Each structure stands twice: as C-alpha cells, then as structure tokens.
Image (tube, rainbow, N blue to C red):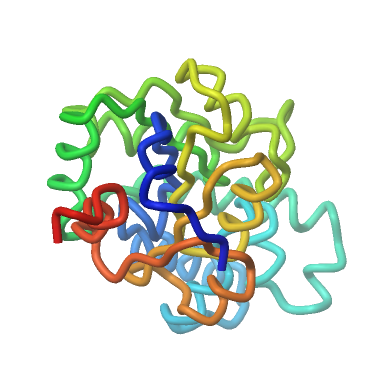
Length: 231
C-alpha cells in the first residue's frame, strides 16, 4: 500500500468520490432494471450479487457483460439493448437507492474542515446528476462528473484531473475514494491518494492489489485517517 506520514495528511484539500458503491447503494435498482430488460429480450437474468462485478466500467460495458456471448458480439444489438436499459433505469433509478450509513456524517466532517468535494463516476452524466440532486444536495459538490462522450472513462485520469481543477486544487492535494480497482487505478494515474472502502461492491483484496493507499472499514474511519490523533 501507499503510505503518507501523519504530517503529510494535512496537505489534502480535496475529496473526490466514486458514486455507486461508495457514497450510494444503487445496486438493487441497477440489477432489477437490467433483469427486466433481459427478460423482455428473452435472455437469462442474473442474481443481484453478480452485478457487484458487472458494474463499474460504464453502462455500455455493463450491457455487454450481462448479455449472452452471441449477443455481446453484435455491436448493433448492444446499442439497442443499452438504449432499452437506460429507458428502464430512468423509471427505477431511485426506488431503492440510498446513501450508505455514515456517509452524511462523513460529508459533514469534510465540509466543516473546508474540503472541496467532488464526484467522478462512470455512471452516465444524466444519472450522476440526478443522484446528486436527489440524495446529496445538502453538500456543496462543486465537481459532479459522470460518463460523458468527450472524456475517457475511469481508470483514465482525465476526469479526476478535471475534478481537481474544478475544486481549485492540485491532484496531489486530493484523496480519491472508491470501492473498486478502477477507482484505485484512477487515483494513482491522476496523482491522487487512493482510498478504498469495504462497504461497497468489492473486497479488500481487489483494493489492495490495485494500489489502495488506505482502506476504510466504515465512513467514520476517514476522520481517523485525516487526523490520527483523534482516535
């Protein structure tokens, strides 16, 4: 793991978050929407736990992963299927979605310490913005960045660097917090400090193997990372 000294932890001025699996539990709405579309297409559905590994790389890759091998090899079918999924998800995206326990207190703590807050997700921009407006509007997220055609998806560093610029910080002054290997790789490639979380969709080994500098068991542990003397 990467390490920082106690003194160096005070250099951080920005906190950029992944969304799904990090700030919010959105898995049930994603899985149920996708399974409805699979059923309509006469294709096999998947148990919700499998979606923990299907999600993370954007909606198009999600669509490819849930399809049969034959369908996933047909670009035109994927395009049509993805459109159907996004239309269904637009009806269901907030039925079961929620903030994880402890997230509100963690964001309050960061805000009270003057941290700039940002979100960088591979979720389509439309749904990323909807989630923030519906569930996260009491905090000042100055950068809210989802998947957009003009910016490469994570783990490319482009979006993370854009978020840091929007917050008025250097990437080296930012922590990037997420629940998957994609997030850890994004942070490292952007020059940010990668922090993994264990309440999301993936496990400790994946986070460690992909370069997490620190791992949080629960949201409140972020305070102990930033201010070790508070333990």
